[in-house]
Image (cartoon, rainbow, N blue to C red; front, side, top):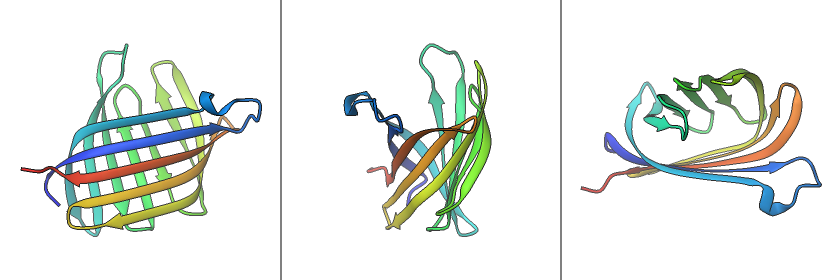
Length: 148
């Protein structure tokens, strides 16, 4: 894998409230340049995120260890350190310009596929905010070597 990569992150939240129609579920996708390195058996992906309507940048670090865990650390406009480990529930605080939330994730599925030019990460998890069940979520990340 090269140092300069292209990162795509697709996410889908399906609200637990059965009254919400499918088209109201929240799908998000970003594609951004990122930096990659491998150290001590772990993959690291670094990228900056700019939020609409708010000045400033959030620095993001994704740390991946095979099928064991994925950690996402955000520092800046929003700050958090989220951990995803299969069949485990993790809690963290998610700080935003509008206040702090207690976020819990229960990781149902975690898959990491690696090749010389691509890392494909899939995470399925349940999300709680301030101890209230909110949504079933999916994250699909692809880290791809930039073509020269």
